[in-house]
Image 1 (tube, rainbow, N blue to C red):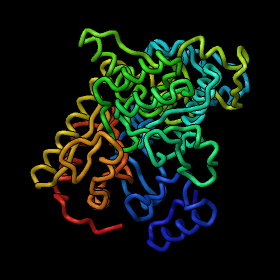
Image 2 (image 1 turned 180 degrees about the vertical axis):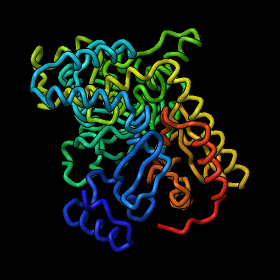
Image 3 (image 1 turned 135 degrees about the vertical axis):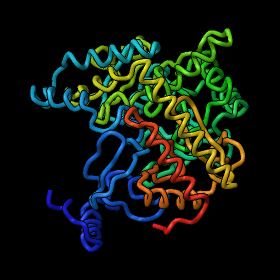
Length: 447
């Protein structure tokens, strides 16, 4: 590991040049390149509890947490022990293991609509499979998604809105064909009238509606009251499939994800809770290793091969080492753990907001369960992607770099959630809040 031993600026630049020479943009996932905030990151060499350490030896309180997967903290002893134990028995078998069944059962026990579960390796695989199931079940082609929501990088979901609400989408990435984009209808998130009108015009062609249980890829946007209930009802009336993406929010926003938050609210209001037909998971269920899942109604899930005719396969699906990390993580997430996560999230969210307000910095806070984010420059929490885009991204960039200098690692984009973990304590929260107070709207030194 000699490449991580440098301390000089020259050594850091050499590393950056080395990464750029072999990796497109020097990264293996675009947001890691810091295009949203400017600057070039150093590689991370280790992480423990609530902290990261980069190649210069500097430590940071980590509010990225592997984009939510590190919910129990980095290198948790029980998770590491489980991974070591699984690795000692063999890295991969290409055959079913007991641990795969145990993880699937645990998911079902905590998330009632997950009657059957298929484990895969990535969230993109999960949502891609859910769409294939929906099209097979309905015999239809058209998918409805919402602007600003992210469901992985499969072709049919990298689609932007067309010129009108009732028009087909257009490719949002090079390499996505117009023909594929034409099968995706993109609507404004939370717009009940637009969704109702789409079904009125295209209902017989709609195979599925897909939404995030808690939109968190444009910052955290709380679902509008009744919007998901309406989507579920429209799908049921028209014979379409309602897909809820919990890759990020599943077992993170709360014990039963974003759907669980709405279920509890429905019950409290005396209403029968709605349920998704299919749901996708990732992040937390892998505990930091690549595990994801598509789950849902047994009749739909039984359309998957080898029972049914919908093909999906993966040599490393349900990999025993990755599943061991997921099982250990999920077992640590009891009621007490979620209460601790909620207290930490609430304390950090309210503390940071108080510091910003005290400095006269306009901001809005998006929050759902333990998930939250800040929208600098806005007066009210946004409800659509267009409103999110009105935030002051430059101010966020300044905050990002100032806090980086104070030993706090924020997500390198204004369009992301802030993630806490069980490893955070009161002192960590105080340090982050104090760092935001020290910023007070001043410009950082820059990237």
